[in-house]
Image (cartoon, rainbow, N blue to C red; front, top):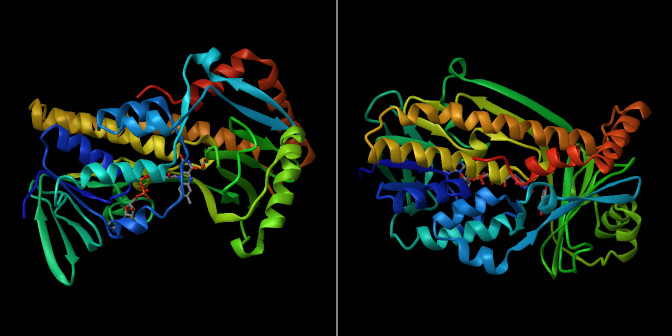
Length: 389
Ligand code: FAS
Ligand code: PHB
């Protein structure tokens, strides 16, 4: 089989890139190792930047986000159980949209699957080959049969644990990493959200976040020890800790209920440079990871998709053979600014195990400065709503 672009990974970045290329007449195939059901079972991001919404509109996915997404004009930050608001609308005249990643991925599947055969689920042992030649190809196995697809380019949209970054020789890439000494325990509960907008709470016992999916589905997170396991946290313990950390007024009105999903995620910052090696391109979590504190992971994956889609249009449609050489530096420029912001939010809001009282006072001073400085709030707002693509 032959196509122009093979995309490895049928998560949000792979599916969005596939649809954008397809709509511009660029042939492509997506190879996803799991079933569609498995991919859609993962509960992840919840906040979309305006740039992300615009790109999804371009891919023909704006309707449900417009009808079912929630426009948020701001967020609340909380320190010592008292909160203050960062008003994005008045500060930078932009907003964010609360709409779950699972729903985005489901919508992407619905459009990609209309073009029969473009996505191949349950593709096993996917292997990019000859990426340094002008005839790269990908092998994989489906229903026990060995398959091969020749192409012009291979795109690694296969996430942090995927195959594509791993096949690049270690001496040809540089990785940068910071692993945070704590995790996030997240739950979904069929309860009304404690607040209309998100609350990020710094507390001396640890971070907490109040988010939501809709008016009857709340999403909450608390910082836990890096050694904790989900089974160590029954619902009562989770709600007790969340109430302790949220601002007083929110704790008093918190509606609790049984968790319908509970998961623990480690936190890291990670970047690989460059994001192109021969005719292999890395996109999204295959190239970088941010702690979810800044609500950036999914949005950053989509900004990579934007840069790569523009580069491939340049190459295939405008005969600009150099366009693809600019992808890595363009994407990394925005990646590092987003890595910085997510690192800063994480450092400001979490309690580090080796943190001293001095460190806690510095965090409280940082948040007090934010509370009283419009310029500091503008900087946070500009980053949170998403830097320009
Ligand atoms: P993904 O990891 O989503 O998709 C990669 C796909 O490739 C998967 O479907 C995988 O099955 C497939 N794949 C892997 N190896 C393969 C192979 N060898 N062959 C074929 N297919 C292969 N971001 C936020 O903005 N906010 C959050 O709150 C948030 N919470 C998160 C919680 C968790 C537990 C995790 C893991 C991530 C979270 N993220 C969050 C980040 C997350 O949303 C990612 O940024 C986003 O899924 C990135 O999308 P992709 O790059 O498409 O990678
Ligand atoms: C979520 O709703 O899952 C969410 C929101 C904001 C974050 C992280 C997660 O920063």
